[in-house]
Image 1 (spheres, rainbow, N blue to C red):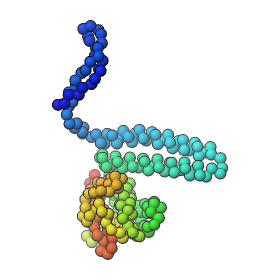
Image 2: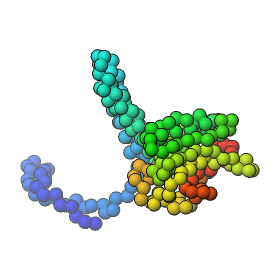
Image 3: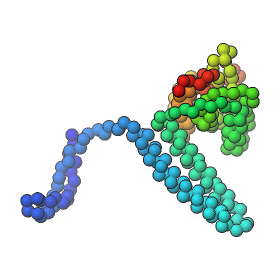
Length: 250
């Protein structure tokens, strides 16, 4: 163990009741070991503290919006953007909790076409140069955790848009045995240099996309499925979440 020297410590003498200046040596415990559950505890603490902060921001935004006179459209837009950024921060903290903590799924019937519509609209606005389309069968129903599946599909869309040239397509395939469903996101570009066919790791993606890949993989595994990346039959690449066609026992 390495000694840690603290210079000019003030030491109290019990015998004389006086104080003196000097040095004291404290033994360092060596390599620090991460306590069990540390990551989840940190994320929960951040969610709690930042949640209170966001509530204050939301309340302030609402009050200022009400008191702004007519004609202050730019200021209203700035406040609306501030609230949207707060929402995005909250959702990211929730996803970090899912990634680092336990994930209890809440199964429910899902119409994939309804799930896809707002995601396609969001991503289309974020990547206006791309044609992002959904060819979901409106009559098809899936059984999964709606919120978690939407998070996973959103991250697959973002990963695909980073590499696409012109088009990204979202669809669902049912296996011939009807035992599995595949939620597919296909793009017409090259594979991201950080990802290779059959990859199960995000390589040198940005921190945010790396988190998204890991979270999508965890969501797929929690549903009893898997996340995969493969070449399309023609040009481009395909992200796929393969999940059982029926919910797992809870």
